[in-house]
Image (tube, one colour):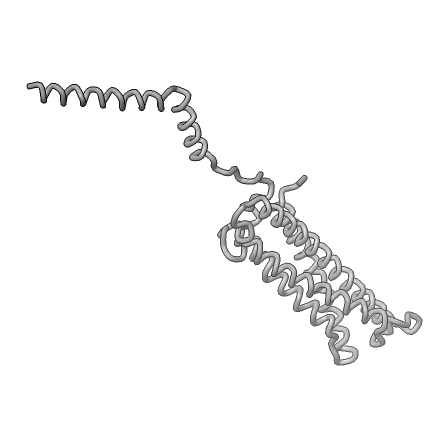
Length: 225
């Protein structure tokens, strides 16, 4: 990869936090306008506020824990993938709901621009921006999740153990497959062949014969005495 995944992770999280801040401000402005004008609030705005708050609470914490307390549960790749996937789905739902309201909504006459006042135009522009930043967050998070998933599967296919429970910084994404330890097998075969080639087997037979002859000589001497 051109950039380390740890750096890509920081960029993705920081960008997502920034977009969440923008969506939080826009959703708050739309909610303030709708409650003042119509005494109602909209589900897409509430979802945008809730998703932005979840993003603020979790992504900075994941970055901080990875730096100051590495190896914790929140740093595991499997936990990161699951949580970011949930966040991305929430952002997708926020963008889709806001875009749908903008196209057919009637509270600010977003579907009928000729009837809009200045407040209506501002509110519709804010709704459009909420949808845009929500979709951007969904795309960014899904792109990072896909990259992390592919690299993790590739590392696991190379027989690396503990990939899913390791952190992004410690995962063996670029490491080759671990070498198979064949040293005991090679020593065993080498010893057998070497012993045969050097005449060890023949020498053993000769030694056995010499021992047998010596034993017979001693025994014969004893009988003679």
